[in-house]
Image 1 (cartoon, one colour):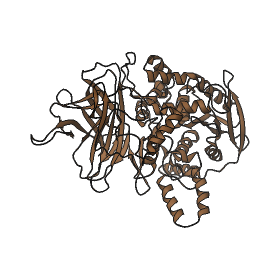
Image 2 (cartoon, rainbow, N blue to C red):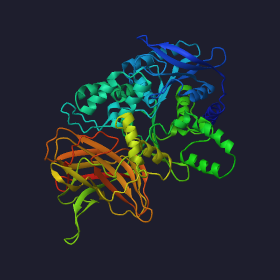
Image 3 (cartoon, helix red, strand yellow):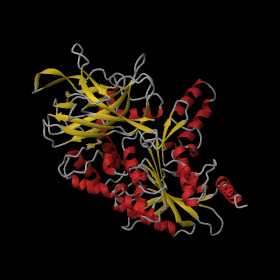
Image 4 (spheres, helix red, strand yellow):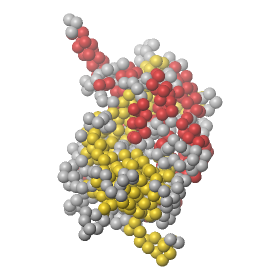
Length: 622
């Protein structure tokens, strides 16, 4: 009999979790809540209709950048039907809310306190079970809110951040006072966000001022203090003290809030109730189908087409885009959010499929494969799953009769160097090749509108993330460019970039994680900016060179003509090479995503060999 009780308990729990009633609910479309400083917060609310005296757990939704309190209407309705009170609000400075955009600062945290005060005063609310979620800005706000408002029990963050400075200024170094940080302004994304904040919201001028300080490399201590207040990484001790259950869901091709920083914060949490998913996609695209009903709209359109080749073709395209034709409840990331809240706010242990909710591995990487299913890589930094392989940069020849060639060797090499020159971009890029002059036309148009923003990088990331075999490709055959200035008054041809290749891998290689790169250079100028790219180099008919990952490094105020050590933390990636391919590392000095501090036609000498063992370490699946 004693042995039967656990099984009976498990059965009852499963029944409770799988036969949950669908609730009717009351919708309140104009809920006004006032913060401590009198700022009006525009919100809407759903309240399930239950038995007399019945109380319900709560989900708070916070808007994304440039969106408002209506963003999550579909998810709010779905949660309400499942027995949750929902409160969706627009953060201050957005849409119907007053005040200026505070970017998760102290004013935003006061607003969170006011929202919770309002909620716990409602008779239908279970004050002990309040959760919060949001996408992008809402994801960052959610993580910050949990650290500042102890009545929030658990959170789920989509495409959020943990270090806002690292998001805008990649590679932020500890020593900011000397202005020699290895940091690069992500000028494209910074420009887009500030443009949208000015156009749609009421942007606090301080936000643009911080961007300008980063671009000009001055008063960085003020920037660091401003950013630390808005970065949940600052409050990791609060998370550990309260052991706040947290689920973070990000996309590994997101060049704004990169998975690297999320994993860094995750690793600092010293308790069990934490999970992180890293999905294929760029910023918000992995979860967008769960709160904007793309699938439902497309399903209506497809029903009009009827059977035939057009419908079949569109079905294939939608499948490649991971669009589920139907309701939003099919979206994988949001299904996981529902499970998480069911467990931590309702006490449900087993989901509707009979799976124990907290039994999953703490980190899961999901990558779409040709079959249309998803392949999971569990704990991608675990040595049981990943083996690091280090290659050394080289420039040598195999015999006195052979030409000198660059390459990646598995052992350290003798002394050598290779020089490239600044001021010209190359085929290596985070953007994409477009036919004819379309690439230049788009760049010119968008630069005119948004001040040096390159749209093709975003288009490339979107297509690569969701169209199967479409990847950012580059020719990478010739880096020679024409230069003319005082050092070359009659004009000359010089190398604007360089490519280092491995030997051929006979079998497919599974790249998973974040590559590391140590590079020694000798710059001609006191300011130097380099971009490193890792490519798959295919062979044979129809071969492509496909971008795997990349990273920029900027150093200011260095001693020209002296060896300089650079460390590149490459963007987290998941990639499978074709059999018979090589892997190449390419360096150049410009990319449309990043601010460039280089001068024109300035030499950067890459050093190899004894004393300067420039190398790259690649994470391969075991």
